[in-house]
View 1 (tube, rainbow, N blue to C red):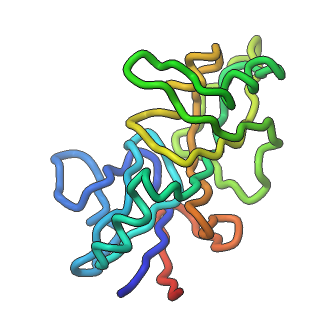
View 2: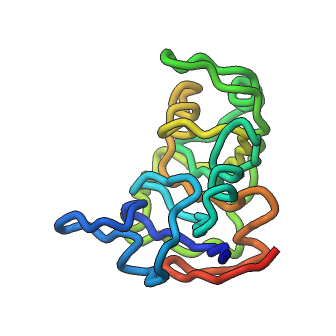
View 3: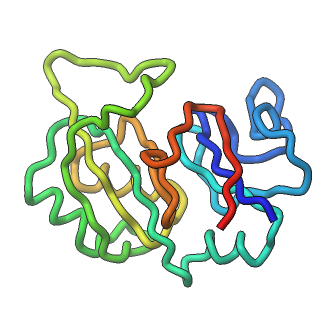
Length: 181
C-alpha cells in the first residue's frame, strides 16, 4: 500500500481525469490505482497524499478523524492580533461555522519556492504570511476565512498533513516521493 507525498503545483487540477487545456495529477503521477486523500483547489499549492488503500484514504481525508492540516497563507495586508484571534475562534462563514483553529503570523518560509506566475505586488499595500492549522477542511475554507477577517488570500500552500510535512520531506512543485509507515 503505497503512500505518495506529492507537491501539487499551482493551477494543477486535483484529479486524474484530463480536462482540456488544464494540467491534472495524471501529468505528474503515473502510478496505477492511487487516489487523492483530500483535495486542493487549482489555485492552491502544496502537499497532497495519495494512496491505493481506501481505509487509509478515508482516515486521512474524513473530518471525523481530525487529521491536522497546516496551510501557509500569504494575505493582502498585515493582520493584527484581533484579526488572528477572529481566525482562531469559530468563524461564521454563512453556510457553516468553522471549528477553532490555530493561526499565527510567520515569516515567509526560507524553503518555499517562488510561485509561477508570481503574486501581484502592490507598493502601497504590504503582504504578510500566516500559518493556519485546521482539523477540518471545507471547500475554499482558508480563503473564505482570511477574506472574512479582511485579509484576502493571495497565495495558499498546504505545508503539512498530520505527521507529513514539506519542511521534512522537501519536494519541489510536481515532485513526489513514496513513504512507508
